[in-house]
Length: 250
Image (cartoon, rainbow, N blue to C red; front, side, top):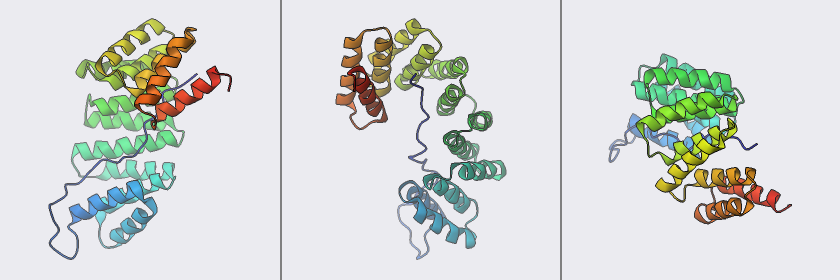
Protein backbone atom coordinates (compact mmCIF):
# COMPACT_ATOMS: atom_id res chain seq x y z
CA UNK A 1 0.00 0.00 0.00
CA UNK A 2 1.34 3.42 -0.91
CA UNK A 3 1.80 5.52 2.20
CA UNK A 4 1.82 9.23 2.80
CA UNK A 5 5.46 10.18 2.93
CA UNK A 6 7.01 12.91 5.10
CA UNK A 7 8.01 16.10 3.46
CA UNK A 8 11.70 16.58 2.88
CA UNK A 9 13.43 18.65 5.53
CA UNK A 10 14.90 20.99 2.92
CA UNK A 11 14.51 23.71 1.80
CA UNK A 12 15.16 25.25 5.19
CA UNK A 13 13.30 28.17 6.66
CA UNK A 14 14.86 31.59 6.28
CA UNK A 15 15.21 32.27 9.97
CA UNK A 16 17.06 35.58 10.07
CA UNK A 17 16.46 38.91 8.34
CA UNK A 18 19.07 39.84 5.76
CA UNK A 19 20.18 43.49 5.72
CA UNK A 20 20.70 45.14 2.36
CA UNK A 21 24.47 45.18 2.72
CA UNK A 22 27.12 44.40 5.29
CA UNK A 23 29.30 47.42 5.88
CA UNK A 24 31.99 45.90 8.10
CA UNK A 25 34.64 43.37 7.19
CA UNK A 26 33.06 40.97 9.68
CA UNK A 27 29.53 40.11 8.51
CA UNK A 28 26.61 41.19 10.60
CA UNK A 29 25.48 38.28 12.81
CA UNK A 30 22.09 38.19 11.07
CA UNK A 31 23.82 38.03 7.69
CA UNK A 32 26.11 35.26 8.90
CA UNK A 33 23.18 33.33 10.31
CA UNK A 34 21.29 33.48 7.02
CA UNK A 35 24.43 32.56 5.05
CA UNK A 36 25.17 29.58 7.28
CA UNK A 37 21.60 28.27 7.10
CA UNK A 38 21.59 28.58 3.32
CA UNK A 39 24.92 26.77 3.16
CA UNK A 40 23.49 23.99 5.35
CA UNK A 41 20.86 23.46 2.68
CA UNK A 42 23.28 23.21 -0.23
CA UNK A 43 26.71 22.25 1.20
CA UNK A 44 26.19 20.86 4.71
CA UNK A 45 29.84 19.86 5.31
CA UNK A 46 30.99 23.42 4.69
CA UNK A 47 28.17 24.72 6.87
CA UNK A 48 29.20 22.37 9.68
CA UNK A 49 32.77 23.67 9.55
CA UNK A 50 31.67 27.29 9.31
CA UNK A 51 29.25 26.94 12.22
CA UNK A 52 31.89 25.19 14.32
CA UNK A 53 34.33 28.05 13.86
CA UNK A 54 31.57 30.54 14.52
CA UNK A 55 30.54 28.75 17.70
CA UNK A 56 34.13 29.03 18.92
CA UNK A 57 33.91 32.79 18.41
CA UNK A 58 30.82 33.24 20.58
CA UNK A 59 28.38 32.52 17.75
CA UNK A 60 25.90 31.36 20.34
CA UNK A 61 22.48 30.00 19.47
CA UNK A 62 22.57 30.85 15.73
CA UNK A 63 25.81 28.90 15.31
CA UNK A 64 24.43 25.90 17.23
CA UNK A 65 21.26 25.99 15.14
CA UNK A 66 23.26 25.99 11.91
CA UNK A 67 25.39 23.09 13.19
CA UNK A 68 22.29 21.04 13.96
CA UNK A 69 20.73 21.69 10.58
CA UNK A 70 24.00 20.86 8.81
CA UNK A 71 23.90 17.45 10.52
CA UNK A 72 20.60 16.78 8.76
CA UNK A 73 22.28 17.26 5.41
CA UNK A 74 25.12 15.01 6.54
CA UNK A 75 22.66 12.20 7.31
CA UNK A 76 23.02 12.35 11.11
CA UNK A 77 19.30 12.69 11.64
CA UNK A 78 18.95 11.45 15.23
CA UNK A 79 21.83 13.61 16.46
CA UNK A 80 20.47 16.61 14.56
CA UNK A 81 17.00 16.07 16.00
CA UNK A 82 18.29 15.83 19.57
CA UNK A 83 20.30 19.03 19.16
CA UNK A 84 17.40 20.93 17.62
CA UNK A 85 15.04 19.75 20.33
CA UNK A 86 17.42 20.82 23.09
CA UNK A 87 18.07 24.16 21.40
CA UNK A 88 14.33 24.89 21.14
CA UNK A 89 13.87 24.03 24.82
CA UNK A 90 16.59 26.43 26.00
CA UNK A 91 16.15 29.18 23.42
CA UNK A 92 14.89 32.63 24.36
CA UNK A 93 13.94 33.34 20.75
CA UNK A 94 10.43 34.13 19.60
CA UNK A 95 7.87 31.34 19.77
CA UNK A 96 7.74 31.13 15.97
CA UNK A 97 11.48 30.41 15.75
CA UNK A 98 11.35 27.87 18.57
CA UNK A 99 8.42 26.15 16.85
CA UNK A 100 10.42 26.10 13.60
CA UNK A 101 13.32 24.41 15.40
CA UNK A 102 10.94 21.82 16.82
CA UNK A 103 9.42 21.26 13.38
CA UNK A 104 12.88 20.58 11.97
CA UNK A 105 13.64 18.26 14.90
CA UNK A 106 10.41 16.34 14.34
CA UNK A 107 11.09 15.85 10.65
CA UNK A 108 14.58 14.60 11.49
CA UNK A 109 13.14 12.16 14.05
CA UNK A 110 10.76 10.90 11.40
CA UNK A 111 13.58 10.25 8.94
CA UNK A 112 15.40 8.52 11.80
CA UNK A 113 12.41 6.13 12.08
CA UNK A 114 11.16 7.44 15.40
CA UNK A 115 7.59 8.63 14.68
CA UNK A 116 6.62 8.59 18.35
CA UNK A 117 9.34 11.11 19.21
CA UNK A 118 8.43 13.14 16.12
CA UNK A 119 4.79 13.26 17.22
CA UNK A 120 5.72 14.41 20.72
CA UNK A 121 7.94 17.18 19.37
CA UNK A 122 5.30 18.33 16.89
CA UNK A 123 2.72 18.43 19.65
CA UNK A 124 5.06 20.64 21.69
CA UNK A 125 5.48 22.94 18.68
CA UNK A 126 1.69 23.19 18.39
CA UNK A 127 1.55 24.34 22.01
CA UNK A 128 3.68 27.28 20.91
CA UNK A 129 1.67 27.93 17.72
CA UNK A 130 -1.80 26.41 18.26
CA UNK A 131 -3.59 25.49 15.06
CA UNK A 132 -0.64 26.26 12.78
CA UNK A 133 -1.53 24.60 9.43
CA UNK A 134 2.03 23.59 8.51
CA UNK A 135 2.64 21.99 11.91
CA UNK A 136 -0.71 20.18 11.78
CA UNK A 137 0.08 18.87 8.30
CA UNK A 138 3.47 17.63 9.45
CA UNK A 139 1.91 15.92 12.44
CA UNK A 140 -0.70 14.29 10.21
CA UNK A 141 2.10 12.78 8.12
CA UNK A 142 3.74 11.49 11.29
CA UNK A 143 0.47 9.93 12.44
CA UNK A 144 0.18 8.06 9.14
CA UNK A 145 3.73 6.78 9.58
CA UNK A 146 2.68 5.56 13.03
CA UNK A 147 -0.44 3.88 11.60
CA UNK A 148 -2.96 6.30 13.09
CA UNK A 149 -4.81 7.41 9.96
CA UNK A 150 -7.85 8.57 11.91
CA UNK A 151 -5.65 10.90 13.93
CA UNK A 152 -4.15 12.17 10.68
CA UNK A 153 -7.63 12.83 9.29
CA UNK A 154 -8.48 14.85 12.42
CA UNK A 155 -5.37 17.05 12.04
CA UNK A 156 -5.96 17.57 8.32
CA UNK A 157 -9.59 18.46 9.00
CA UNK A 158 -8.37 21.19 11.35
CA UNK A 159 -6.12 22.47 8.56
CA UNK A 160 -9.03 22.51 6.12
CA UNK A 161 -11.32 24.23 8.59
CA UNK A 162 -8.84 27.11 8.51
CA UNK A 163 -7.87 26.81 4.82
CA UNK A 164 -10.69 25.10 2.92
CA UNK A 165 -9.00 25.64 -0.46
CA UNK A 166 -5.72 23.96 0.52
CA UNK A 167 -5.39 21.44 -2.31
CA UNK A 168 -2.41 19.77 -0.70
CA UNK A 169 -4.24 19.12 2.56
CA UNK A 170 -7.23 17.79 0.62
CA UNK A 171 -5.00 15.39 -1.32
CA UNK A 172 -3.34 14.19 1.87
CA UNK A 173 -6.66 13.69 3.61
CA UNK A 174 -7.91 11.75 0.58
CA UNK A 175 -4.94 9.39 0.97
CA UNK A 176 -5.72 9.00 4.65
CA UNK A 177 -9.39 8.25 3.96
CA UNK A 178 -8.35 5.64 1.40
CA UNK A 179 -6.08 4.00 3.96
CA UNK A 180 -8.95 4.09 6.45
CA UNK A 181 -11.11 2.13 4.01
CA UNK A 182 -13.34 5.02 2.94
CA UNK A 183 -12.76 5.46 -0.82
CA UNK A 184 -15.98 7.44 -1.37
CA UNK A 185 -14.91 10.22 0.99
CA UNK A 186 -11.41 10.06 -0.46
CA UNK A 187 -12.82 10.71 -3.94
CA UNK A 188 -14.84 13.65 -2.63
CA UNK A 189 -11.67 15.23 -1.24
CA UNK A 190 -9.84 14.55 -4.50
CA UNK A 191 -12.59 16.16 -6.55
CA UNK A 192 -12.31 19.27 -4.37
CA UNK A 193 -8.51 19.30 -4.61
CA UNK A 194 -8.49 18.94 -8.40
CA UNK A 195 -11.20 21.59 -8.83
CA UNK A 196 -8.84 23.98 -7.01
CA UNK A 197 -5.66 22.82 -8.78
CA UNK A 198 -6.18 20.41 -11.71
CA UNK A 199 -2.44 19.71 -11.95
CA UNK A 200 -1.69 19.16 -8.25
CA UNK A 201 0.86 16.29 -8.20
CA UNK A 202 -0.28 14.63 -4.97
CA UNK A 203 -3.92 14.79 -6.02
CA UNK A 204 -3.20 13.27 -9.44
CA UNK A 205 -1.12 10.52 -7.85
CA UNK A 206 -3.88 9.68 -5.40
CA UNK A 207 -6.53 9.79 -8.12
CA UNK A 208 -4.60 7.12 -10.01
CA UNK A 209 -4.17 4.97 -6.92
CA UNK A 210 -7.87 5.10 -6.08
CA UNK A 211 -8.84 4.32 -9.67
CA UNK A 212 -6.39 1.42 -9.86
CA UNK A 213 -7.72 -0.07 -6.63
CA UNK A 214 -11.24 0.15 -8.07
CA UNK A 215 -10.10 -1.68 -11.21
CA UNK A 216 -10.35 1.37 -13.45
CA UNK A 217 -6.96 1.15 -15.16
CA UNK A 218 -7.89 3.68 -17.85
CA UNK A 219 -8.56 6.46 -15.34
CA UNK A 220 -5.47 5.46 -13.35
CA UNK A 221 -3.24 5.66 -16.41
CA UNK A 222 -4.74 8.99 -17.48
CA UNK A 223 -4.17 10.51 -14.02
CA UNK A 224 -0.57 9.30 -13.78
CA UNK A 225 0.29 10.42 -17.30
CA UNK A 226 -1.18 13.84 -16.51
CA UNK A 227 1.05 13.94 -13.43
CA UNK A 228 4.14 13.07 -15.49
CA UNK A 229 3.24 15.86 -17.88
CA UNK A 230 2.55 18.46 -15.16
CA UNK A 231 5.42 17.72 -12.76
CA UNK A 232 7.88 15.25 -14.33
CA UNK A 233 10.64 15.83 -11.77
CA UNK A 234 8.49 15.60 -8.64
CA UNK A 235 8.62 12.77 -6.09
CA UNK A 236 5.01 12.02 -6.99
CA UNK A 237 6.04 11.52 -10.62
CA UNK A 238 8.63 8.97 -9.55
CA UNK A 239 5.94 7.05 -7.69
CA UNK A 240 3.57 7.30 -10.66
CA UNK A 241 6.22 5.83 -12.97
CA UNK A 242 6.63 2.90 -10.60
CA UNK A 243 2.86 2.32 -10.57
CA UNK A 244 2.73 2.45 -14.36
CA UNK A 245 5.55 -0.09 -14.61
CA UNK A 246 3.76 -2.46 -12.28
CA UNK A 247 0.47 -2.00 -14.11
CA UNK A 248 2.18 -2.69 -17.43
CA UNK A 249 3.85 -5.82 -16.06
CA UNK A 250 7.30 -4.23 -15.76
